Image 1 (cartoon, rainbow, N blue to C red):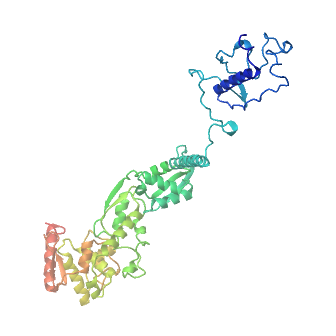
Image 2: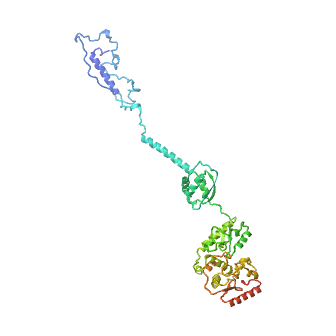
Image 3: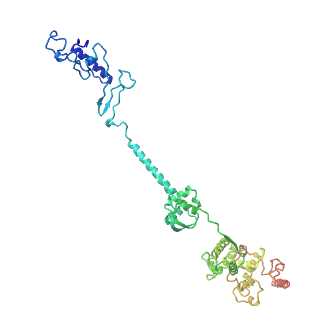
Length: 472
């Protein structure tokens, strides 16, 4: 090989180092070694042969190579150094290629690679805060789902068994929820009230007696408690003024109403006659059974009718001014007795206070009242003329025989007669007689002689007409 044999060992070593430097620049790892020491020789320069001895190697054999040398025939000192292909070498557990990336210019240095982190992990783990946030989000989601399922109960059944619950009047949604939860109809009073609030039905819960199931859903219970009941069939019953207990009892029986009105009106926990001044041994509610028109559910209940009458009486009688009657030493019960006689005798509004004045005047004078209506009450004769024996009856209701007021009212008066009895007209009248053809009006007088004359006129007209001459 031309030129190589002419080099000295120092030149060959320098060429080898130059080749090694160039190769190191291509892989980015070059640390220039210190200058090699000069070879030590014991012979003089003239004594050294130019070429190596034959026994150490002939010129045709390759020169001993270092780790980066190539055979001599591949390059000469005068020619440029030929680049060798980069061979992969192991780096840890990976093989790192020394070849330049595709498209890179020869002789350029490849980009530096970042060293992998300890353990070979390239991504940071989740922080503790992120893990806590994820757990909290899952817990909140589960809580919301549970809350909605408990509130709306999409998988709830229709309930089982049967239980009766009574919802009192004026009960709030919280009270209703407590009653239902205590009875086992619902599972939670809180969720029931919340469901009623969301549905806008808190104020629509109706009182009453309900037959429900155990373990019902909130929606099913609300549908029942807020549904208006079917309108009950109602009967209107009109009781006119002046009817007695016995007459009303006959009316109830004639209409097929079950029960006894007479028995139901002997006494009641709703009203005590003694509270109005009646004797404690009073045996009936006559006078307190207020006449009016009542709407009663079918079938008609006598006890319900009596309750309505007594409640209505208390409301109406409460507004009557009794100061004048008290000034005459009359009790509220006395006023009620006077009112019953006014109701039985008066046929016009004009005559009510006048008849009341006659009663007041006769009581003040100590005269018997002599009112036929009291005798009719005692005998039950409301249609025929009173007989002599009936007029002379010893009954305490016979005011022709006994002075003062009868023991009890003789019928159930209306408010107009009660007001007339409490506020009589100021008159001197002691007598009154029905006017013939007066359409129910009475003729009043303070003279007994005049009274006899008026009475004769009435009897003549009656005989002529063959009956009562009040209406012509």
